[in-house]
Amino acid sequence: MTRGDPGRSHVGSADAVTLGRRGAVTAEPARPRFRQRLGVRVAAAFVAVTLVGIGLVGLVIYELAKPALEEILGTLLLNIARTGALLIDPALHVQVETTLTQDSDAYRRVRAALAAVQDANGVETPIYTLTGFDAAGRLAHFMVTSRGPGLPGEPYPLVEALLEPLDQAFRDGVATHTRIYRNQSGTWLTAFAPVRDPRGRVFAVLDVDYRVDVYLARLAGVRHVVLGASLLGGAVALVTGIVLARRVTGPVSVLTRGVIRVAGGDLSQALPVRSADEVGQLTRAFNAMQEGLRQRDFIRDTFGRYVSPEVAQTLLESPEGLRLGGEKREVTVLMSDLRGYTRFVEEGDPAVVVEVLNQYLGGMTDIIVEHGGTINEFVGDGIVAFFGAPLRADDHAERAAACALAMQVTLVELNGALAARNRPRLEMGIGLNTGDAIVGNVGSEKRAKYTAVGTAIKLAARVEGCTVGGQVVLSPFTY
Image 1 (spheres, rainbow, N blue to C red):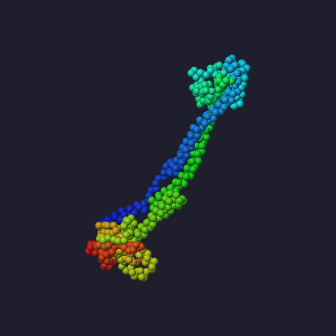
Image 2: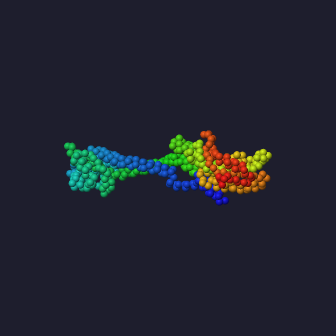
Image 3: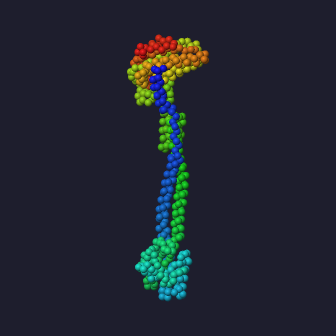
């Protein structure tokens, strides 16, 4: 039916829009990869910040501990050197300087005193006295050692780190210690204490060396403590980060799944609100939005029982859609009525009457909506519809005519189905008229109806009254 095609094409596009908004199956987004998940990123960031914080604190502690340990060891060596210097007999030491031999009683007695100091303080390396300091030549001379090598008068080459502290001890008579230094024998820390004669003159310096392996071991211990604290802090941060991430991202994941459901058209499930924070407020707002969409769909579905999808869409989406008022527009009015149905209603079984009427009205409604018509009302077994409003259509008369013919064809098919169930045969007359009418929302603020009023409606009723079963009668204006 050529004249019916434009109407079907038009309504088809409207249905596509409706499906796209309400019924289309929305593809679920791909689940993000493990490293892209918000919870994983939050936990990783928490762990990273914790590790960096612990590492920085540990580094500061390590750098502070390094000079502190050095100062503690230097002070300890200074105390040993000062004590040892006081135990040296100046007269005996002068005799050793004079004889330069280890076989003298003076050497043995001074050596015994130094050995006692070494043993009492648990010093692992020998302690000894130095004389003949030459800063320019970077040289001094052994005199008495507590144990081991170092003959009286044997030269002792000095590394750079020893020059200034040793110069202070000889020249200024001040006990001092070096920084940590390295020589051919290893890594050391050395303390010097001046040895004075009865007149207070510094004639020798007591040298106490300390191999800093223990010191380095302590620093390594500090590093291990820092590393262990970092690992422990990282583990605690990981567990805490996962817990916090789940608390934060759990509601977000629930919201995400809810949005996906809503996008797919499922408005049946409200989300639980488990907190009063921003996430809880967002969840409540989501539930309110979903309830609004559910009510909107209910209104649209309710409207769809009486008007075309275009009318429902226009009323719901236009800011002016629900305002009372109207406009003058040319429309084509279709009125249909069954012939002889009143007697069937009076004499037939009520359940059968309602069943047949619903089947008839349902079939006719589908035809009218397919052709872009707006059903104004059902009057018993009669139907009042118009074409050309609320959506304008220049071919509204052709739509109405095509719709009327399709209704008669559909009724023939319906009668075949009714006869198979021993139901009465139906006959329908249809009248069409074209003219100006006032279309819009009529009623009150509490109850309104989108309708058409005017002489065009009354003339359509008169044209329909002139029909018999199976006829479609057009007024001259529609023709």
